[in-house]
Image 1 (cartoon, rainbow, N blue to C red):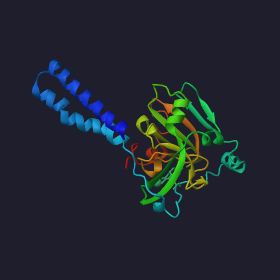
Image 2 (image 1 turned 90 degrees about the vertical axis):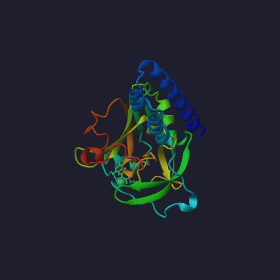
Image 3 (image 1 turned 90 degrees about the horizontal axis):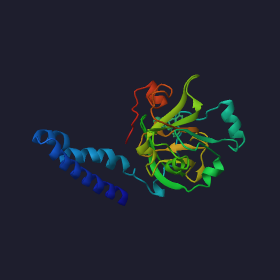
Length: 251
Ligand SMILES: Nc1nc2c(c(=O)[nH]1)N[C@H]1C(S)=C(S)[C@@H](COP(=O)(O)O)O[C@H]1N2
Ligand SMILES: [Mo]
């Protein structure tokens, strides 16, 4: 939380210096009031930094849902996925590529030996159900640092093993605020057990400030991009492309 407080303090002083600069540049009171009023700047900065960086609520172990139901794909069932599953995912690799200085190809064991985060959070599906589960995984930030994310990158795209139709795989994407959020992890365990196939084995995204459909299961590849326009339907995710779901699905 101290990070948040110091960021707020920083934004406060930025606002003050912008207001001072504004006095010199545009002296009319109405311009100053409309564009740079301390109140509006405060609202804007809260929205841009404060709200987006706030933590999602975490719960106690006695609040866990007895079962964490599966939704969407319960088994990708492609020949490729079936072969990976039969081999205990020993041959599975997470590709990390796109706008990175050092593309990575990570095994499940490599991911499991990296520093973890464990969090008990509530999953909210737009279809009207929720479940509380304990997730364990590697912070996405750790992976992006290891891959030397380019400063041109604006979004992280998650490519999944399952196909929704013959031509459309499941995929999702998030911006860099969510990508570097401390609760954004690549999870390999749910409720102290390795992920089951229905819940996204061997690896899924948990981006806890977002709705259920952003929590991409069956991860195969992470791609850093400048724009989402050239990725599949161009709206940042399977559901965003085919339906009216928002790209930013904050809760
Ligand atoms: N690859 C993939 N990820 C997915 C989906 C899917 O069908 N395929 N469904 C999404 C939806 S709508 C929800 S609510 C959650 C469900 O996660 P669960 O099956 O672990 O409950 O996964 C999300 N991620
Ligand atoms: Mo969902």
